[in-house]
Image 1 (cartoon, one colour):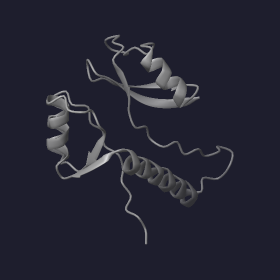
Image 2 (image 1 turned 180 degrees about the horizontal axis):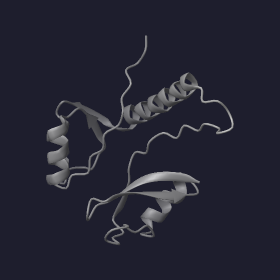
Image 3 (image 1 turned 135 degrees about the vertical axis):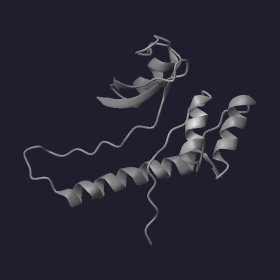
Image 4 (image 1 turned 90 degrees about the vertical axis):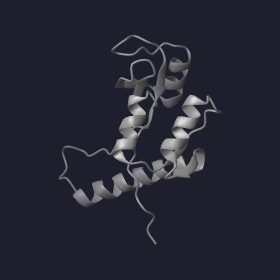
Length: 138
């Protein structure tokens, strides 16, 4: 089973969903089979999910190993974002509004924004997420 973070486009509620696979999740969302836990809307989107770092409970916790695995997962997310989204730098808030209000081609973007800009975007009903970012090591 895989846990995905989901959000409702109607009421901006964030919740988790458990699925057999990513393909199963996408299929169920497309068929309007996934409903919001708050308002029962079927206008659901899949959000970025935290990486799952498993640690066996019967072994001593090896902090260094867990940290290394976590960094590896975060780097995988970073690589995925860089390969599949357009980088807009510090113009993130502007570009997110332009896409949202101009009904421009809905393309995924990434960049930087202040905490207050993110709050304002969410208050305007613009769906944004933050992800941890690890700088590349030389």
